[in-house]
Image 1: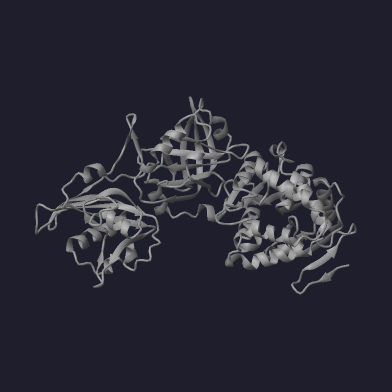
Image 2: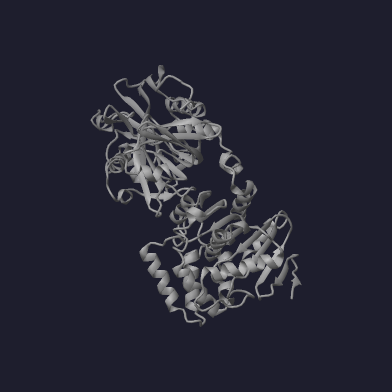
Length: 597
């Protein structure tokens, strides 16, 4: 029997007892939920998609209105239930969106009945769990006996949302808890026992997945990790990975707008099949920002990363990196065919290029070696494609593999940049077999006369650090000499006193004091980690607002006016002279970006 809900949804029951919700019109899309949930958990997606798609959400066996699965159920039982529903509804082929356990069911259908599936989206899917994680999941499954378990529900909520649950996730957690509390206990137990052992069910079969497939998860989902999605996308011939920053396991209800938009973009993009028809969000680059990010590379050193076939992070050091095109945004890097990582990178669906800073010199050596555990030496996270991004890099470029080119004893990896980031840290250079630094030696500066004023223009995401005095004047951080953190008169001492960690980069200005010619002022550009100091003197000012600040020192005002202008032009020099006159000497002659590769 069926009823029409207040939302205009049709809730029905198939002849075999399967419950389902149906709404909207257009190309059919089937939604398959995870363990402990039911068809109504897709309410945000149904509402957002029903004006363009015929949306069907199923209650899987043992959940919602559907009957129990067999005691020793298999994925084939759940896939069979789904196909019977499609037959009942008269649907020959659908796009499938599955979450967690539902993603495994969707993959099972696509592998065994590809003619019934147009495209596949696997949200927060599991794949070849690491040993410790697999053991924990199987231990939880073994403890289930078909009885209600409030403490188990609490533990599930904590795993999926955090403990305590953040305020921003409270509503999603409440919705999830209600579903868990209403599920049939025996149905939950039987399904979870299967889920606990099914993570490797498709490991040897994904290479035969014929349909376009999107594998999407959250960066904070430890149980359905980015590495798992990246590994599945790598194996699937038409697979693609997307990692949503900051999201967890229940991201479909925690951030429904973001997740549903990604699903819709994939479905719109010719069922995800066309590499040229990519979502606008991936290609709508700010050309100026992209050019500046590419300009962070100083004929220097990168670490190129990807996820291997078993979900393991892989990487190698390279200085053969360059931009290829701004529109579309393409970069390339080369890898020797004799390199141990060549089989992984030459067959990968995506990779990332991390442009190293001076402080990452040790990492450069590690990734140039044959070490078996390179990633234990660095801090990293998965980017949007699932590829590892290294903390502290000057710039990162997260890429889909656009083309693999055979080039003698090397292969050229051409990547379409999906996302990038950059900062003003000092890059690590390499020349004639040695590392080089473009900045003025801090060791030499430390040996300079103690009355030298050393200051810094310290940047943080388009803002500059100032100290505001009691009289309302704004000053750049500066001190007598570079000094040490314990020397309160020095630059380092003044920053340390306010708990500010700074990284000095390029030399920006040097001038002699007009009133005291023997005294010299030296200013650097640099970066800071966002200060958490409660000191009321600390101010972060947008670059565009600097011109309006009350700055007492005329020479510093003049220097900052040049700094603002050069930021806009993205062309920096070094001022050399005195407080009254001098010249700006460019770091390099202006040149157009080489886009020919």
